[in-house]
Image (cartoon, rainbow, N blue to C red; front, side, top):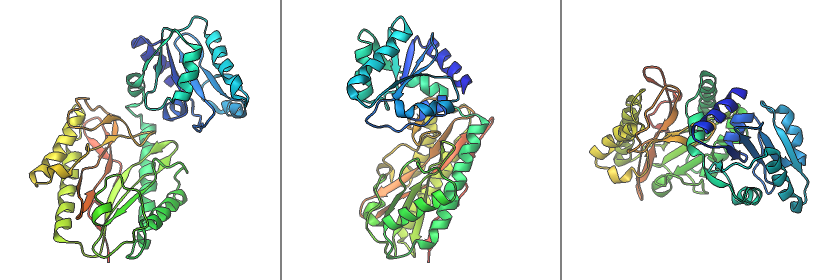
Length: 368
């Protein structure tokens, strides 16, 4: 972890960034090993290229710092919000000269924290540090990959344990609840990468980000199940299809096309190729089959301590894949009124190829 702080400060110097601030989330955990909830109380880690890291936090959280993997100088505050501004000004005083630029994580920092920071650093420019943080986390070492492999196994075992309850008459919500329980039983952390998606029938399954509902399964349904586990802070993200008895020839054909697209995407994965080429390889299969407009999202996204992180696998992305980059391959076809299919795997780029961390069969799981 100390090595991670050193790499971060070097990346900051290379980018001409004097300080970086983080609130609770994957990047803060990556650097310190600590977990904080996002709440009404601000928690901000300040990493400077010239001073030891500081953390502004509620006094009730201060005991956590004994478990930090890197020394942090605490600046605690009490429960009176009128006193919180003073803590941010104290952090500013401890730095000495105010930095000209402060980097922020644009998808994580809230107005709450930014407001306090701008009050303490009124003459400082706040800029995105997205590229700096991405360069730090985008490649995984062997230990990180093994944690993701374990997260994939936990998720797959939980899915297989859930299959027996999937029957006509069972609601999407009931299946999602059972899958959640099985994830915990099989070793997932309680904070899942995302709430499981269980989407069935001609309309719900055609919504890529459907929310489980009270809809009950019917014979002939296809069911999209998209779920993941978290193990020692690292995520898996998998999608498989369940058929409730015999499905229509059109749905079977769509499932076969998506399976072929998934295979084409996985086969295109190797070091030195652009991320966008994975999307193109899978999309070509679906477009050739006449369903191009019904594949309405990128083929995947980076995966690690977050369910969605760089690199994002859209067709124009020219980021070159290198060993240790981990991401999903998840082509889909969605025809509202007929149904939808998505098949998703987790991949890691190796020295000369790619490996799928997910190993479940990609055929329909047919419930007789």
